[in-house]
Length: 237
Image 1 (cartoon, rainbow, N blue to C red):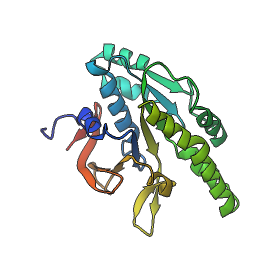
Image 2 (cartoon, helix red, strand yellow):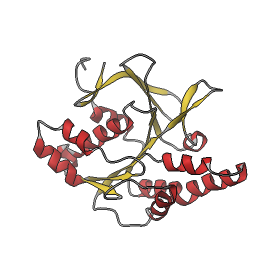
Image 3 (spheres, helix red, strand yellow):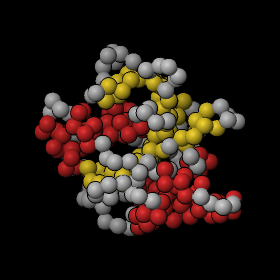
Image 4 (cartoon, rainbow, N blue to C red):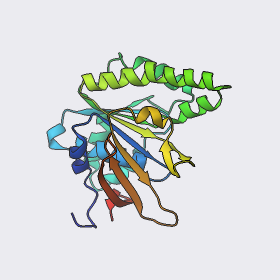
């Protein structure tokens, strides 16, 4: 692939297709949502996946419809097609609180999803959880909150996705870990135990070029790339 070519999201998906869970983390403006959107748009618009659809959960971020339109402004028919293939929950706007998000995720293990749902994106899963945990008065209360999140919300969702062969894409916030000297997803100890492919996005100081590291569960680096976010999406540098 030439450096000027658009990033081949389909090839990245082929690399990850043996895994059913993809975690995308990074600081603000590193392109987490753009990457997830580009990945979903690429596979849904493929002729091989004409019957498949995606559920996009607006956990704390509004679905980037304008960004999707920009991706396909030269192909309005494809944009119209994709809009019909991506179902939003909640329909109008993101959850306003952890309680709202919790109530929804607690039931998603059993609710009826649109026919032939093959991709499920949560953008972003950690925002409201992080705020709720910061309000806990002591460590015991915080631990109980995180345990309930895993046992009643995340674990049933993962089990359903594995059972129904749905690719689950989790978008995370990150915070700086001073002991390690790097950013990590919130509640990292939990997510590190999940059998997923982790895509970490970062932006070096005073540089337009960003870095993407794709890491498997055993921390073996699968790929390390430099990229930029352009109008048409993520592109290799």
